[in-house]
Length: 278
Length: 291
Image: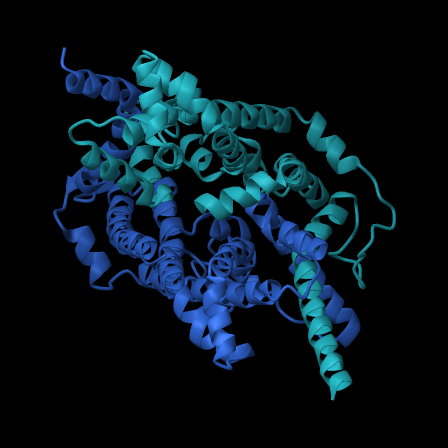
């Protein structure tokens, strides 16, 4: 009787392991395929397809990293990621603080006004924004590419929530010490929510590096493309070999992936605590 | 100066950099969209057409729009299936039979699509599917068609890939919800003689109802917002077979240069998504009171 129960437990345990291992394999499979194609494996013409590259080479990576167009797009991507991440948080932090810790008339209205922006479908807003930028004649400029995506209601909401969690006493203590409102905000409150700010920076870096919808609208000309957009639009050109594209895909994949591996706990907490999504 | 006045001034100062950009680049364009939706663009310029764009869309005269709506339904359904699958996976992990290190590895792997650009995922899946087709050809000797290039199968195949990408996120949310179920409830159930499935069905599941509802509404919103997967995996194709509303609007704008028509699509989608979001927010705030 006892041993029967134990063996049943064992079967359940191994079944769960098998299910989870299969799930893991489903997740690794496409990533593995793009890696080996980037290294020169042939899955198109050869039957059976090479599941391990037989004659690995780095020509694809060499091509991407020496091609002037791709280099330009990598530069644009870095610029976009850095400017949008830090610019967006630089305006979101004071706004989040004001919404959370300062009592002023119309605060509630202001909160909903900003939450509304968070609820709107982002890509849908790009449609009228594109028309507006065309009229303002800043389509195909760095200003048009970088500035319109700075006001992120999402970031403000995130920062506001972080400030909300701090106790009232902190504000009182600061007031007793005679700290002005800006000192209270940036010297006393901001350092306390540093972990959340770090999490926000990490997520923003990943989002902005991967963002290709906005550059697709704002940068019709190739000198303003970012790396994801460059690779995406090169897919439809017949002059580029697929292992070069795969290499581009891998290069695009690596920076956020490394960040994710290095700071896994931040990413996990960001999702669990704040429900951060792509 | 009175303190309340000074506070209001400080708040305004802190909010203004964000607010100015927010109004110029988010609120104003959204309002502009309503204005543009009343026009039709042609080579002769813009012509005021009143509600004709809306009429065309809402009376079902645009078969492509109907197709994108059907696809939105398919993707929403996949999102719901994804939530249930996530609940299942989270349940398996939460049994705590699997060792901790393996669980961490599992999380690391299934969350990975969240940090990877859809451009990479789109390429990777296209390659992987071709690789599978060749493998099947080798092993079984039969040639199957690429589902992503098939008019009927494309939205279903793409939906599965979208599910794949979001499963990790949903699993993590479910897992923290499961861990939030107070231990005492489970113990009370055990004392009453409930085991295994009954325990899950009558104690855990009712407690998870708010988050399940929250995520289900989120599934519908997510389906309306889908853009990157459609663009990168199938380019909306073949034809318009796997297009989403957002993808259709972007094509109307950037390729057909029909500003008015694209704006109309945009207004309709914004209204639908805002309505669903308000419902979702209501659920969110009522859940907080429950716990």
